[in-house]
Image (spheres, rainbow, N blue to C red):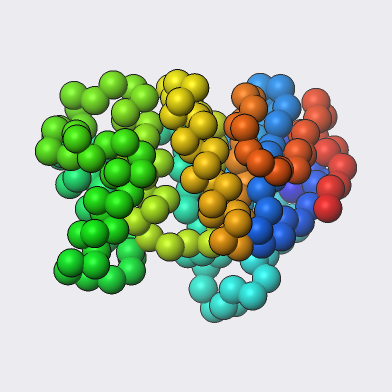
Length: 205
């Protein structure tokens, strides 16, 4: 059970997601999509029940295996696009150092079509460009679990299709994705878990 502000948002929910799988959380506004994503990411503690990542070191926090991208892009306006991404690479413990780390940064920028904007302060970017920069940190530190809350916000159709390809690649490589969304993501293959109108959500496997 997960509560916010003293009110039960999610209760009686049980589900499992396997490596190499994407799960889409859908449902009306207020159904608990964001609450569930934040609980999975470790930002909300369940009042009852457990969240477990099989095969992950029990001595470590589950969040250490996860990338979380929420509604906010978490970019610092005064830093350049490259400096923002370099911060996230360091903060998230990106693999490699020196030339290897720098090559990873530029590969992520190129993948999201941001390499021509690398030296521009993030504050000058459009809403869609800021969103792509926020998502680019998925590629600068290797983490098996991606938790995405409305990842297509501010993205146009072309950028949404690009994100779908990146998610499909992560899943094909054995990664796991849970995404809260009210719009189709265009993924090659994904399960859907629709959160209902009440707190007793039921279960899914």
